Length: 187
Image (cartoon, rainbow, N blue to C red; front, side, top):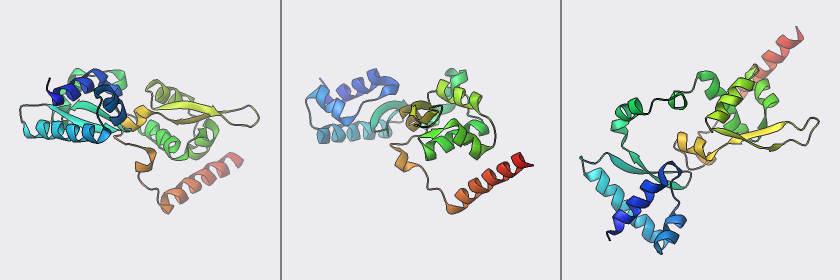
């Protein structure tokens, strides 16, 4: 059997879930270093062949077999579905708050955004970008939200540490928005 074909077949079967280096090492009785070298060879093979539409990416510490970016319009035409549609600005804003502040309650998000967002949270949960990660030890025990592994995959991140840094201006703007909304509620 061709060793690179073995890793290719494992990644193909794993699909969107992908496989970690440890999982592939266990399945092939190899070391993680050996798996990494093999994946690098396979990636180089894909990149050197113009006739191949495949490549390998790493997200959330998992490796996945995917199509090259140059074929995205063709593939997206095939894969059109409500879940594949772009996120609205409102959903992206809500998702950004959750990503940076997690774990965070709905009320905390609403204070920052200044709008009610039960529908936005439902849509983000439906798309598997956020999940309930617990409950706050406070009256009413509000739900705490956080991002999912699919969130990392969707944005091509290995972890939350790869999120862009928030500048002080961003935080000041967020605080100003909160106080502006607070002031309006008092008027």
